Image (tube, rainbow, N blue to C red):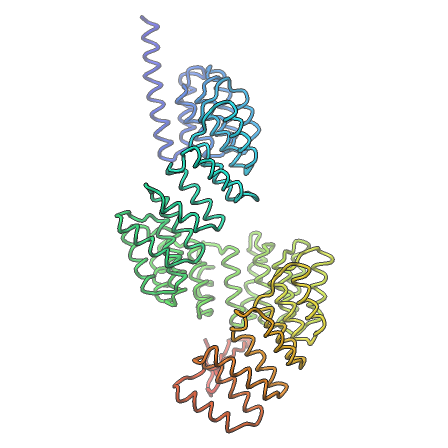
Length: 624
């Protein structure tokens, strides 16, 4: 009787401990879970501390904390508790070791299990997938089938997710999808969502859409996955249609769905749609979430409404560095770089520290303003307080770009050399482009050759744009033509519009106008319909006084974009340079008749005390 009473008391106590453990897990208090387990062990001893319900809970806490030390300690308790053959406990061990990045221990536990459930096999498959070992997970799936075990839908979910990241993921993913259909598991909701996500990540959004349309049951994950797919391809029409379809089916959008909607509104630049998305975020209670705040600020900026963007920013009481970066980026890229600098100075007076994206953005603002002094101040801040940002390649690339735009090639070179041997393609590209815009063609060519020959870095399309620009601005015709030809033959880079514009500009500057025209006519038809190349040819004709070809280029420009005022201004300048005053007057009168006006040019200079802006046609300057 006494022994039976002791067992009943222990069972009751164990139930209470398990309830406390489970409650702490559900609350996300994983450190508290380990403390409760430690108290439990001290109270009843290791041998009585837990059952096959207790230990999986403790292992889950270890996995969430990533604590391999605690996991191994509790693993030793498994043997003392006599649970080393329990399938539930052993399966939990496989999971915790894989999540703590000890895959070898996961496999050892799996191999030593006397009995394995389907969940045990699935856990080991997931462990391999978590470490991006797709081939091993597929081999394990085949081994499972060889032993006569029928895979469940859960057996495939992690494998399908891994296919999104593997080099042969598309081929393997298609094979697995076919096999799942053969097994009749294709209607399983979590598995269908996994396949949708895989196709979206592989860029096959049409395939994801087919799965979505065929689903008899959909979860909010299904909707957010397909919405994210449409955002990734820029198909905002389908995005809005699907979102409205979701609402018609009385499905309340979660924060992820609203994130996708806001991204879509930002892509369209449609302010009324943006305002509607903001209203939905407010109604759903998601507007105060940090990612939503950031996206709303960016969305309004991209829609041209910096006032609303600032209003969202100002209403957030605890501003993260991401929110600061969003508003600074909005002002930088959409017309108010001065205000961006003002905000950056405010940021430095708070306890929030700028990150690499913040610094790269504010350096871009300095570049747009040509503010060398402010750019130098930010460099000083990076070097003194950057906490590792001084070696950040993204920041250094922006610094080089800023100095080049502000006219200080020497400081750009100093920043470039300071990076040392860790230079990536973007760093090289920034310095080559800096030489290009300053007409330092020989320096650009020398650096381009050094990048390839000494560092072994393969150029991309952007670098080729820079080197072709350098050749064009420096009259290096033979080198430019050779680079243009090698771009495709040696590196498989198909020339884009920017490359063609550079080579046309190169030929025009050198006086090879007929060859420039032939280059345009040999371009793909979609590029011949771009005004950019014809405008370049017109400038060349004006420089070399070729009236006949110039008028041909003008005709092409006006056929392509008859309403573009800059084309008429270019035509006026062309006639004026040729001494054809009557024709120039006719064109100028047609501009006035249209009621059109070209935005005046402006420039800015810095003095020791201030910066001043000068506007064409104005007799006064103003200080921003």
